[in-house]
Image (cartoon, rainbow, N blue to C red; front, side, top):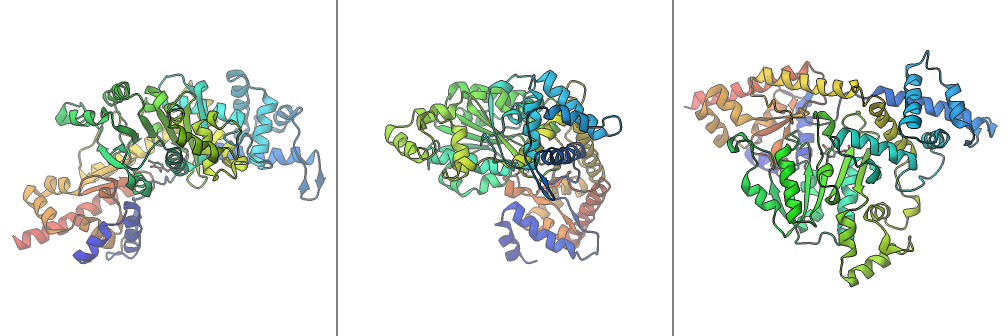
Amino acid sequence: MNISDEEKIETLGAFEISEKMVELAKINAKGNPYLNAGRGNPNWINKKARLAFSRLVEFGIEESERTISDGDLVGYTELEGISKRLVQFLAPQTNETDQFLVLCLDYLKNKLGLDLDDVVKEFIDGVLGNLYPSPNRVLKHTEIILNQYLQSVLYNGVDLANDTTLFPTEGGSAAIVYTFNSLKENKLIKPGDKIAINTPIFTPYLQIPVLNDYELVELDLSSKEEHNWEIDPTTIDKLNDPELKAFFLVNPSNPGSKALDDTALKEIKKAVMNNPDLMIITDDVYGTFVNDFQTVYSVVPFNTLLVYSYSKLFGATGWRLGIIGLHKENVFDKLIKELPSEEQAKLNKRYNLVVLDTEEMSFIDRMVADSRSIGLYHIAGLSTPSQIMEALFSLTHLVVSDISDDYIEASKKLVNERYEKLHAALDYAKDESAKNAKYYSMINIYHLAEEKYGAEFSHYLETHYEQIDFLINLAQKNGIVLMDGVGFGANPGDLRVSEANLPTKDYQKIGQQMLELLNEYYQAFKKQS
Ligand SMILES: *Cc1c(COP(=O)(O)O)cnc(C)c1O
């Protein structure tokens, strides 16, 4: 590929570059097997919750047959005695899935104190999908369960489950889109406002066109060895800027795969004291991959909107399962109440179509309405089967949360093994800090070049080739697809390797192929010098 083609490719987003690389890698020159370690889609799934979902559908059909049964046309479910009938239906002695469902019932009744007929009816109608989501933001018992899950995996001991309102969405992606959209519609961010982002960051955050209207301030909140593991003081200054309206972060980060440490959390808390109206959006989809993870939401709940997704941990990207969480008392509601009266009047007109007391309408309910262009507010909400799938995924954790969650441990072990294999093959320095999720590795080819063949060669590589040349050749010649870190705001030469989506044995091959290609560049360097 010539330089001008390479320059063109460099203008694309990281995901779009990756698609181009896939085309090249499939027909690679060396005839190697094509390996795509670019994408973050896991190659594992959680089986327990899926089997439980299927059992609930089977039981739901039997329930429906009780009221109307005319061939394939069957009826509706009845509340009275439904949980007893479910218990009779289940065969926990012979069926592991039923054992899990019995544990769930026990947990829902004895730990959460819920009325079992009510919950089972919600679950069964939910999986059958026979009713519009009602309430439209989130099903009643589902919200309680999801809150317990988020608290257990993300809050690190801080108790917020009863004070958090939830809006299940079509994946974390929709959560992000709805949030930006409603922030804008409600005039909470206006063109020209200063917004901080923790970089490098998941590209969509850099590519949402409305963000072009804002002054983006880049923050790197990772503590580094050269600063004695403290955060760079100039970064902290930026967070304390009184003109800063909002702060968006991915934690643990993507592509960096690192969670904020206690120092960073403390700095954020301080910044909020100086800047009490700061709006924080935290995307915590990788939280469960770090031991003792603590979300920013649990540190400054009044100021923070939480985004979570089931996609990664449960291998559920096709389901589209995400959540928006917001504290009952929050800065978003406060700022809406403080808007100038003419803005208020416009917003009242906007939401008056669907609610009477517009001024009292919370930001989270405005997001629900905005997600369906207001007019379809009454039929808004995530599909009920999807909401129950979220509840079941959550319950796989909740029923074992006071012992140890073997599933979460297995997921960490798997990405960890792949991380080890890749780093061993490359002989590349590992980051063993407790905050490393190891879901992705960042490998810098210039560092790698220097380690293997010295600084002069590394300099040659940097100055004689486009930064994307190595990535392209790795696909075109060797059949390996990685993700370009530059699109995420990382340094030139940073390549993101996903530890999620290939069989473990392939990570050694990826390392070997990277070294083989590097050696070819080295041979070219030796020839010319
Ligand atoms: C994968 C990912 C998402 C997308 O989540 P979905 O639920 O699949 O839409 C959101 N944020 C980050 C940082 C991600 O890596």
